[in-house]
Image 1: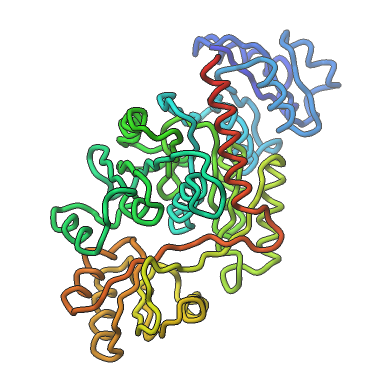
Image 2: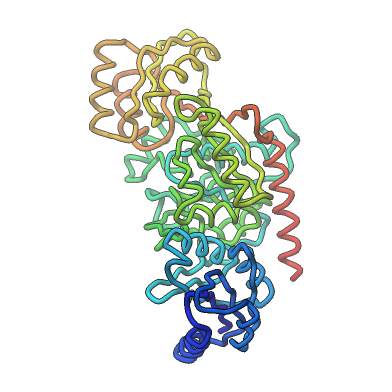
Length: 457
């Protein structure tokens, strides 16, 4: 196994040389090169590093030096023999993000970071939609991408896509829903829920919102770099291979990525998240791997313009080639609610209540009589519904398809005689970012090019 060693000038050169030999010998590594990452206390000049007997890369920016050495020597592992004061824990995370993004193991005296391994089994052009956390808009964006590629968003159809999901409430084996064929009604979803299924899982939501074929999968656990402990997504990819669809969208879960190799990455980041989601821990790994970053919730009180600008700059500093789209979400009911007294249940935070209310009333001609922001808290949601039914006399329950939307909200509303309407969340671009539709088409075309290249090599 080829090894690249990271060394510093806080160690004498004979100590570095002997350390490289001992580590390589004890672990069965072939030492192919070293990177000098700083510190001059115990060496005379950089020329003295020739005594190591290895090619040594030196750059004023250690990250650039590491990247150059990885590209030149193609190691399987990068071994860090440095220490304070040349590096600290924060700096090592920067090294880890870069090294893992190149598919190389990064290890030190008491740590090891392994790059995520993605199974190369998808036989069609594909992309992954990942996120920096839960409730940042991955499912809404995956559905939007599916609609765009299939010609449902005002652009010419390019593909016949399907969507593979991997929720924490997904089915034990891949489950196909023909969203373009099945009429997904409240009664249908209630029946699925009563059969013991999580009928608000992402593949139900995407099938309803995108009207496309979806393949529901499950996963458990998630690591620093988005690796899952277990999942049935590889089986889902094999199911997708057998369907007539010609493009596959793999949707992540939380901050975990689908464990299948795809041809492009789209990363969803909430503008309300703290900047260290981008710059800290394993955020930079995800940024470096992504072709398009979509900032969501780019509005006050979630995030002001300065915060959005700060997030955009942090993304470009890590990955200058990544495009950044700035967006906000607005609800879009799937059925007519004009002149109705609407009770909305949502996972959106209470600070967005007035914005959502105005959008619904101005664009869809309804009267929003109450909003519950407790869709992801079943006990509180039941209390909210009970109080609203007593006090506000709604005629329609409008709900997102998430969390307790089916087994609680839909079930109680149907029993109370309310009409149930489901709502999509539509990403809308704001000034200062790339046009989302154009970027979706660009990323899809890029995925096709990479797929063709991958299949010929």
